Image 1 (cartoon, rainbow, N blue to C red):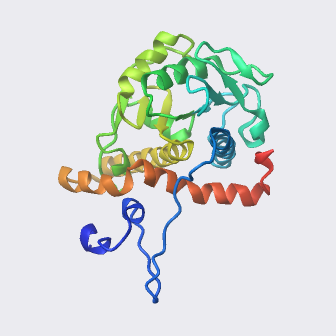
Image 2 (image 1 turned 120 degrees about the vertical axis):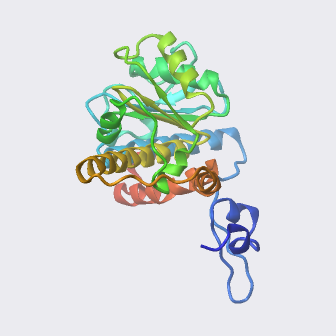
Length: 285
């Protein structure tokens, strides 16, 4: 593989950050899409809500729903100590922008007329408070995330995709039941530290990001990475073959291409486009 500096040396910073390259025969540079600029905070609020609603639909398509379990939130760009999340009893596949609930840091519903998930508030409120750089958080009871969580351990760096979480994920090493206490939420936020993901022992996965797009993609990728690890561990035990680990130098270098906030945002856009086409934009109402 050619060094990134050589392959991307002529690219704009926006392209190089996400590993994109492109120039026409006439020399016109081709720029990859990026997080939009807004004329007002009201515009950005609407954008965040639209992408949050889309993320719920995408999670439903991937089977991340389980009854009323699971929740995602996005920080409000106007009332920055408030955040939007789903009403408790609505299926992920049915959530639209108009269904989203705005709550303040005390859990009071400011916009909306449905109750929220108490566990969602206990976790998300403490994460948003502890991490001003985080504007979104995702948690769902995905199958592979749940299965891997019982080991109470971090992922092995054994695939390129796992490197999205290189030195950027942690484990919450206890299970205290359904999280209904803000102190438990504080402990989760503390164990998350400055990472993008945490494996909640005997529970599942939680991811965060500067955008709901990135947080959602990190969750999908983390669940698939857990699946790959479970398969590899089972195969290694059955065959006696040893796993090959990616060395730290290569892992650190690769993280800069696959684990950045910009790459997380970009990676979610095809899923947004897909759900927009499949639903004919019904979640935008």
